[in-house]
Length: 221
Image (cartoon, rainbow, N blue to C red; front, side):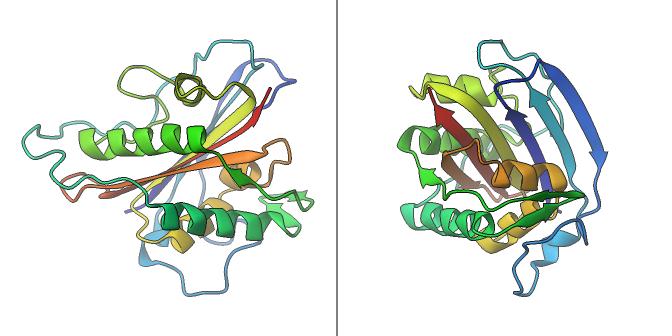
């Protein structure tokens, strides 16, 4: 089973919370790889987005939480993203941004390449590890934090920010293709307002989805 979720917060719009509903993964967008799809891509993702000004506080509800995880052995083999894996995800994201892309019914023009940011990497990795260790799937952390809260905690002073998360995908290529096939996640990837990205990854075979991915997008003030 593989699942996706997203949050985005452009700067010039008022606060809102949108539940996008169930989005079939097959045939939703362009810019996917021509490589053979990962078997987990037959799943159906749930997408959510939150839009607000940079100065406002987050009020989005938690979604997609998985509960009932036994404490014993929960972090037995949880591990974080390697530098090589972060670079691989960045390469696939920038390959998508290098050309026009159809995200659902909206066509996005090519966007400048994203750069990895160490503070966003830290925020992404810590959230991926937390989800893998404590067996939940949500933009909302166990401490109630939202993506932008975790970015700020790492010292990233953002002007605009967003997050894509996924679980159950076994390769970097598969998870980026999964995001690109979901209009909301694809829109975050193609958003020209985002200049930097962090990549988080964690595995724990004792958890429900086993593999967890996080992309934190941002532009600094």
